[in-house]
Length: 265
Image 1: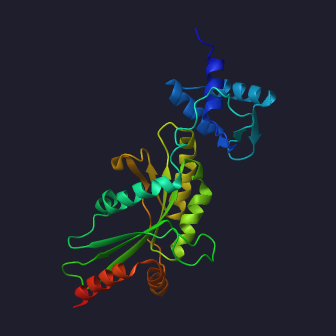
Image 2: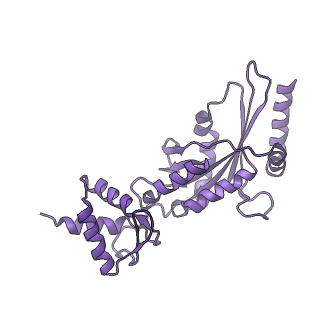
Image 3: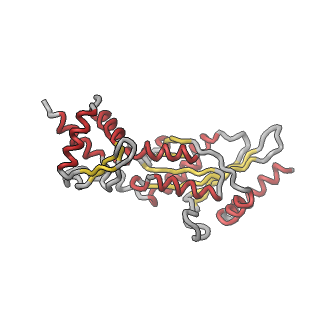
């Protein structure tokens, strides 16, 4: 019969991020239980954890419930990260396809609405911290009885597996200085090492009203998972207008202006 302590120790070391990111004890114990298909008692978990700390394999840090992080790198015979081949650049085309298709269905816009999507990762002024989202999506809607024009501007910050963090949420939040909605898009394969950080990032997104979209399989647009809905920010109209002026191409500006003139007529 396998030694349960050895199995728990193996799973604990496998689940800790190689970059030394600390993980809360309660989260780590729950994930080990999921992998084993059974509850791991606190006594067993903390006994294994304390032995690994004593052996210099992991480190403890303070926080609510305590956290642990990896010190010794995983053994060389372990499999490489599953997301290694998907850089941010290689994910850009997949995100653009998603924004032009499934995401617009998710917005559930009124009939007759229009959307424009543009890669703005290399467009606009370089000054200012976190001033460049990777993509913007602009929606313009008309309603049957109400005279108001509804224009919404969404910003999207894309991160590969290694880039998902609370700092990434802060980047998406900072970009709502210029947009109505901010979204973090993050490549996380199910049961990968990045999965252990999802709960913390999701909580941070919910607190700040930032949307969270997980790319589970970049080759399948249906695998994009919306974990948090973005909340509309009261960004001043002149600021949004200046942002669109500097980010949209001339054709998009013309199409948007023509659409809005049609609503106003």
